[in-house]
Image (cartoon, rainbow, N blue to C red; front, side, top):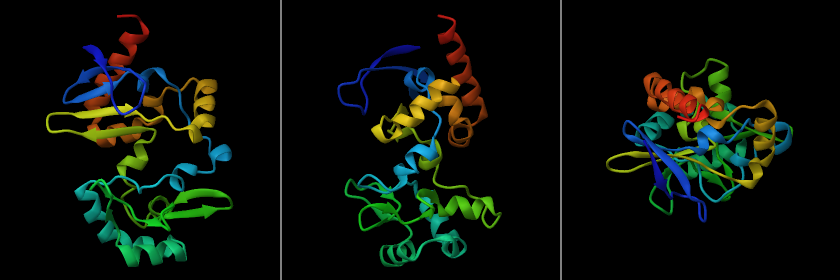
Length: 205
């Protein structure tokens, strides 16, 4: 089922379809995307004016794992977290990761010029079993929860232009790039249904 629906992106009319209790933008099926860290250096983790969106459950996880993640973090990040907390309430009352001087996410670390996630580094080394906030894992997809449904949208950001170019070159649509994260968020059955929609769209059904 598809219908006209304008969501989140000013002056951009998205075609959306319903999948279970989600309303999904066709952009995630039609647009291409593959992160290109060599070009953007992880700018999405240090640019912007808010931390990564969190669920209530994730705030509890962050409190629990912080002692294990702390050794991976920068001094500035540790100072911000121990001053502000492992999570904060943003200006719009959403739950978020804290920032360093209203810029970098407090959990960001650097490999040379490239921003990486300290939580994910702890996960990769087997120290914790939680990869990172699902909102980070899903990017460039953003999920907005409403009372009756969740809106699943493609977030456009000019710092990700290299990722769009690489995705187009490799012919990898957004939904395939974030397959693991979508399954983590919505489950394998939901993703299988999404694949069917993508195939039908491709075949003009």
